[in-house]
Each structure stands twice: as structure tokens, then as C-alpha cells.
Image (cartoon, helix red, strand yellow):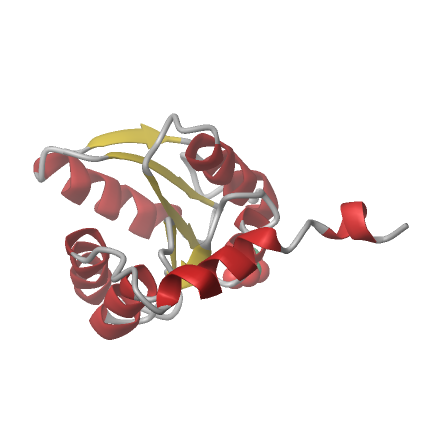
Length: 152
Ligand code: RB5
């Protein structure tokens, strides 16, 4: 059982809800960070909410959905300790865990079907970081500071 934070904007809420149900059926504990309707909202707010759950240790992994899975990943990646990856299929979902130690999976409701998204999520959860040559590369990602700390 894994504790997973999930969030989406209005363009991703339907897929997010499908995936949250799927995760709960599998026995995972889900922290649903919203949104909960198709009323227009801003994806950075939900990317941040999921990222803070993961960075703070309240959740082990995160799931983010917006229209493309791109903007919400950009937002989540601003939170130190978060490695959010936009994926489109089983292979990218598996490889970003194995090679990048991604801790937030992001998908686009407008780009991926529900079945493919479920399969990609399962692949993400079923994979693990390969360590080895990937350790120092991921450490270099984590060593990059947020812009506001380097802008002086
Ligand atoms: C919302 O219209 C859309 O821009 C958003 O969900 C996302 O695709 C941004 O990256």
C-alpha cells in the first residue's frame, strides 16, 4: 500500500477521478488535493498542492493531471525534492521511475485515454529506481536550486 497525493485542474479532473478510484480499488491510500469539478481553475495550484504533500513526506508519490500533463508538471517541479514527469504510455512511466526516480507522475486528459493512463500508472507504481549509474545524475537534478535562490 502506497500513500499517493493526487491533483488536477478542470481539464484533468475526470481522468484524475478515474485514476483515484483505480488506486483506491488497488488498496492504496489517496490524498485527493482536488479539484473536484470542471469549473475553471489554475493548474499550478494543484501541481503545488501535490508536490508539497510529496516533498513534506505526507505522500510517497504524486499523481497530477491537467489537459496535457505538462503545465502541472512544470509547477510541481518547482518544489524542491519533487521530480515530476509527464508520461504518455507504459514505457515512459516505467522508465522515469527506473532512471529518474520520478516521484510524481503527470498525464494529460486531452492526450491519453483512460485505459492507457491506468496502465501507465500501474507501470509507474510497479517500477522502482534502478540506482547504479542513475544515482549521481538524479543527485545533480536535486542539487539544482529553484530560480529565486540563484537569481542574485
Ligand atoms: C487548461 O486549459 C490547460 O491549459 C491545462 O490543463 C494544461 O494543459 C496546461 O499545461
